[in-house]
Image (cartoon, rainbow over all chains, first blue to last red; front, top):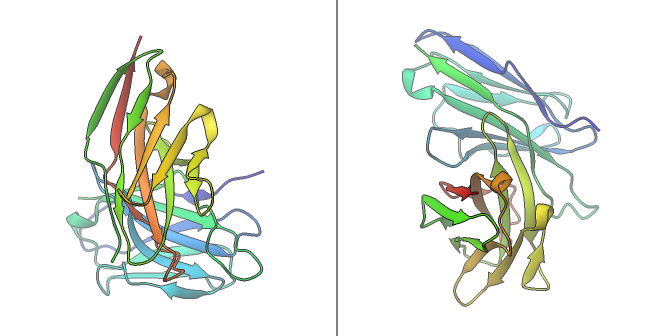
Length: 118
Length: 115
């Protein structure tokens, strides 16, 4: 079946601009995660949704970053007033949960969106 | 707080030899542990995970990992390396005590298998 998809694959923007990054999770997956990966580092957690609500947004670096998942499927990561330090690959992952809501599930990752802020 | 350390930036092995990629972790409660592989210009691919039970976990492409609670380690192993195993490998941990979705990743180890 189809995996996690992310659009666009590449985004180049100018400092100060607003960007939106989209994630389509695997069909039926209730949990969705955003990570950021800088060159030479592992993915860094940003935010986690269970259904429509953000269960944990402790990784968002500041109030310029915001994410939504209004219908419990597609999610959009929004970055306002972009800065050069925001340049990174933004990864999305999704997973299912068992009937007890226990998070032993495996996260399946999309190919990422490479954001470059000039 | 949870953390992961991958002490080796790079591991080089000859094709056909056994390989080990090291990972140590720190969590408050019991850990969920994962290994992912990343090929150039591609997303992270799941290899294997430890949740509970047998300390030796078998995964995709002939890889396995051994959970060692006393040493807080979860090293990735393969008995006979292939050139096609060359890639970037990430270890990740989640804290069972918090039952949270947040995973913490190491900074990765580049595995190079030479023919």
